[in-house]
Image (cartoon, rainbow, N blue to C red):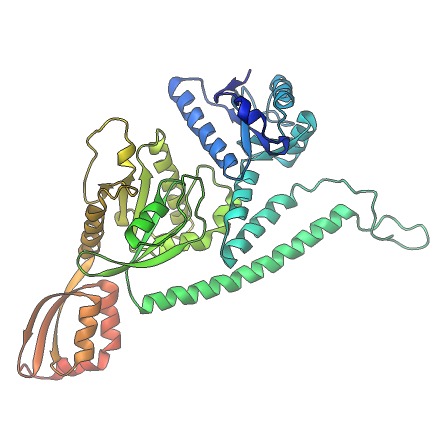
Length: 450
């Protein structure tokens, strides 16, 4: 039997139009231990949140314990019958199964329940489709949708033949409607991939331009609804949409900020991660993840007040580890991570949270801990820098100004003809300075000491 884990709707909910009513069902295969019950309820809450975020009103939610996966419907026959009765009783128009369904299982459940059925992948794709704002995001979501739908075309129009094939007057059937649909989807996928490649080349040019104006990049990553956009707004004064809503932000956003040392960095807000993210979307949002791959520092924002915070941390690390395995992220990425424990103001009981150079507790909404976070970013960037000394002609103002703009001047001694300057630089900036002022540095090496 299935267990209802949410309170049934009130009278005011019962007046909701039937077209918007939804049921959320979580098939659960794990043993019924206390920790597994808590994990199942947290996962169900997440699925309800996802469903509500696209405007559906959830009037029924339940965890169904699976003894075995049924090839035809995933759920057992008794569970399907019980669910059918509950769906009819509550006037449910859409049933969300928080699992991945095969095309056959989805069709069989729709037939058995008498309503529309979507799985976790379809639900997340719908959310992404509604929220994508940039040209690239729109293309990526459409591509993921088509690749997902291509395997779910059903033979509804096999009697509709576009032409007759074969030789003579009694040729065999030609291209059926289902074949035409598959061909059109395939053609559209090819065009989308071509357009996306062009957009990615453009993004690559923008990324190269940012490297020529070399500010360190700090990327925000974390589970969806962990507070990344709220933190982004708090640090930059921007107005990126930040709501208590899953996947409120999809497209990457970048702003410049100034650290306590006066050093400027680029802060990048990215899409939130989620457990069992559809593989179609991992590939589709490669451009968003590329910003993480290019980052000098990765701020892993965690909702420390969430009961499933540790599992969410594992999900984020799983995605980043997958990027490392695919060659998108270098093996040293862990050394660049600072864990930001957000929403400390929501903790039920005050408790001591760890504070190290790689862990900073904050409240992005209340502003608590933000100065300490900025200091931690500053210190992490400083630890990755190298100290270099130069002997430059006093009239070479461009080179001296470049060092002030891109580094932290530790010592300066002005002579009559030479300036002796010691500066802390990023290793990449040291190399860039050597290339940009190659002829000047060569002259200085050949010149005698002043």
